[in-house]
Length: 263
Image (tube, helix red, strand yellow):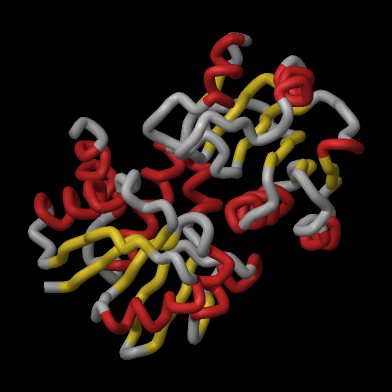
């Protein structure tokens, strides 16, 4: 029996155990998936091997720390320096990133996306911005402070803080912050968000399972939006392929994961 987990802080809200355990149960794969509250990111690797895990997912705020904890990062994770999926490969911690492609999957129904505003500058924002640029999409990043904006400037994004934001039209606005996950906060001042939302066609929030204050504001303006559920499903399917060493088909994994959203 293999054991998998998700690391995060907070982590009690995570649907990942339901998703992956649905796959393991219905496709008869001998494994179990649980949650691990990780308050100290420097203990990630130690905790992973202490729990004798075969693999893990990583959520906020530990995705960049997970990259540094790895013995090796592969594929897109190596490019962006952000890891959300870990695999134990013969005692070595191997890191991957399935977030970006999972997000592209989630917004497939949004048409003609050429100009995107990302709110927040954490690990998820890094992964998404890099992936969008690879698709020749213009990316701007809005953050509370300048502290984390250097990376985005280096890869070719426009960057703004709240006080120097220059309003333009965006095809898609994405909240990558945790604002509203456990409280009633917004990812930026309401007046600023009002102006931004009045100048976009689509909105996405990486938070799932609840209508955040940000999404409530979006709903009040009748803007087409998605919460993080489809992104969660997309990255989860790709992660499960890695966990099971591609022994299960993508179609079977997706089918069983989708069933878990009805629970």
